[in-house]
Amino acid sequence: MGKKIACVITDLFEDVEYLEPSRAFTEAGHEVVTIEKEKGKTVTGKQGKAEVKIDESIDNVKPEDFDALFIPGGFSPDQLREDERFVDFAKYFMDEKKPVFAICHGPQLLLTAKTLEGRGATGYKSIRVDMEYAGAKYMDKEVVVCCNQLVTSREPKDIPAFNREALKVLEK
Image 1 (cartoon, rainbow, N blue to C red):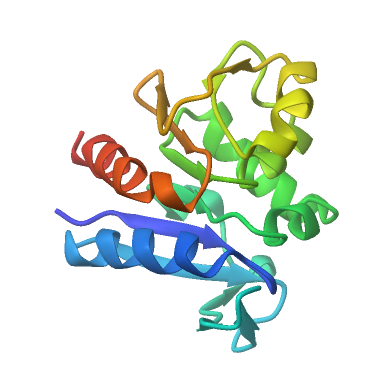
Image 2 (image 1 turned 60 degrees about the vertical axis):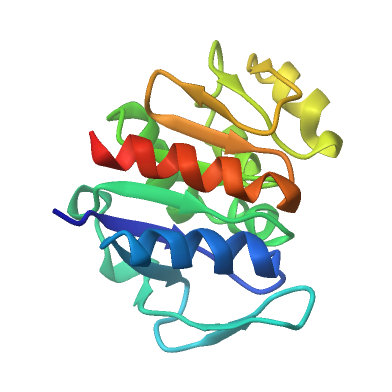
């Protein structure tokens, strides 16, 4: 049975870090719902290769209506973490132990939500120190799965491992 996955995203996301996992999730029978400040808006990836039409506004969704959270990297997570609505949305998934998939700079949203303390995780090398200061157990690996709930990866080349582990978590 397919799961409903919330994807928080805005302009300047890393194109392949949205496109490839999103494709893997939908091909496996899951539904990916894109969420931004404005429903119907089109957001553009930082490489200019992807445009995503936003399905829902953050004001019109509740985290309890979703089975998992997906946070692509790029500059998108840093922009989203300026808005408490997105921070609270992400915090809900971590607090409720629902699956969370964050790649590259995606963990920045989880840092702001103060949810990485004591958790094994990885992310892009430039946020390593931030993750360590937040109390995460940073691991320089292509994919880290913590508590069969949090799946993190470092960069685009890690996407195959990220997708594989995220799909395993969704099976449970």
